[in-house]
Length: 453
Figure 1 (cartoon, rainbow, N blue to C red):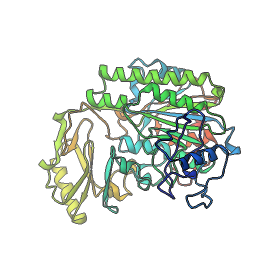
Figure 2: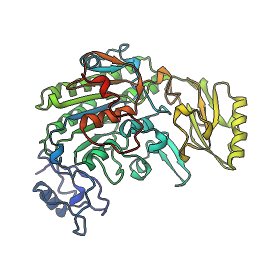
Figure 3: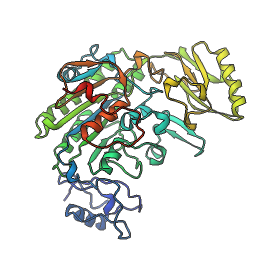
Figure 4: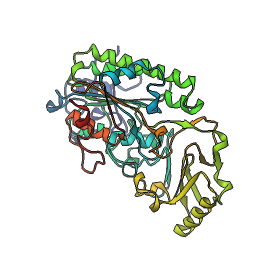
């Protein structure tokens, strides 16, 4: 016998308890051999509507939706946010992608979406779902050093990625859950971390082997749930286009093939939504975190050949290099000047002197010294055999990402000017009718006023 179980870790107890279980649909599988009978009783209680309790029997604090939409949220619209990592804005039109083009034709596209700086995966995925720049949400690069914690955060390290204390701003699913709205995350960066003690009701941890078809089917299964437990926000991530761009370069048959697979997934989602009763209440927003440009080993410089790195933590290399310098500002000045005398294709900055347009100063995780390389050039200590890269100046057209949107009331066939991706968060809160927290960098109604009829 089996029934479906989605659950997340309980902040009160390390063992699963009633308040750590999202409400259960009749579809999924519950492995009674893996979990004890006491947990099965919790599942039955959840299905029967028993109030959540902590492991000591006290009422659980209200931190999230509890897996059920509050009455005020039941009739709100639905938003499916799909990220196609590394989908450069001008791929559309240069590669065959009929379903991406279908949204552009039936909805709205941007000439380009401007990533936050640095134009890397994790900073941008967090900015899209928090509406703030990386210096505020704390994920300042894919890999970085935190001098206060004396530890590193790194893409690919499940321990740091899944630790909610690294994140300094609430993603939209946290805000929605706290207002009684059920949400889901399918592989979205940070989507499995308990940020402010809250996770999406339903979430998965990134698994590269998950097929595009399975991702599409998961989205459609969630949208077909009863309205009381149906997620109003679903954030979906996939990385195939980015991987192809890194491994082969942006203008290659391999990228064309990866886009074709992503296009098939998108078509499966669009066609599936069209068959659902909530089709006329559902928005689909397609984004990417950044673009891609050509690089080679010949344009990768070894930092150890330019400066003495003794007492220097090189937290991240590549198009942007974050350096934490022992010896204070005086040593950082010496290293900056040494780098700038030798670098012909980049420039080093003290953190307080980084150009304001990057919004990349006010966080100790950024480092004491930052080197920003020219397009196509990289600096570091770990040259990799890649043919494509991102992370460069976010105003370069090669770094622009895709943005598409379709749904009820959205204009047809409109192309809007490039805009910063921090505004996507405010668009989603506007569409979902939830209240964003104070201090958001994105502007309320900025996108909604442009794309809605």
